[in-house]
Image 1 (tube, helix red, strand yellow):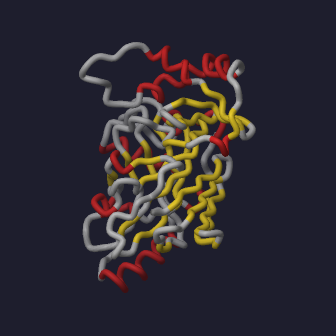
Image 2 (cartoon, helix red, strand yellow; image 1 turned 30 degrees about the vertical axis):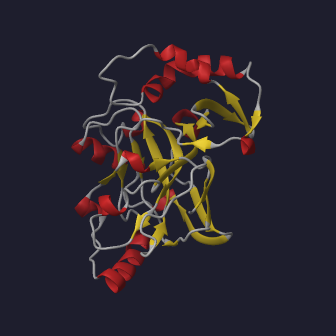
Length: 283
């Protein structure tokens, strides 16, 4: 299935270019008292709700996908995790750029591990990316984003994909400068997710997915997930060694070469095979 959030916090199922409003399924989640759960309760319940979702969708009036505003498909992630420099070609590219402009050394992922982005930075395709410090260079980074579906702690690579709810197109917007990654990548709107989440049962193995990003129609990034330094299962296993992963947590898996500057007025089009195309505007 392809699950989305759209317009005014509606929940939808996307099929053949149409969105079917399944918001009524949220009634099955039950009441919650204070303190509220620290994970995304809809993502956690998704396996049990799949039959009900199809039942509601079968009776819903279809809406053309181009006529809705896509929000982030995950409403309440506990954390956003990201993999730095996880494609070899981007490692070479980053070394050239950072050494030249910022006199920074680039470390490989096996040395520095993952980093966190603020959950307040998360938006969907409908919201513009608002450049925070537009006197500095801001870059686009296309990434396959993995949404955790159930609690995971010290999982093995062999079992890691069993803990995935689904996959989205992700944009990790990056402000260049001397500060730590987490600060420069956590500004409001600097984490884009969407346009929907393809459930893990439909996606299958995320290895071998083609990726393509354009800015204003000009090709910038072209790659394939088979070129990841740390595969998706290896990233999940690594993350679960340091954190307990909860339903709705999002893992950005890294970006390939071709990273480039974006400015106000740009239109970013990011496509990942078997997932979909996310279009974002820069303000």
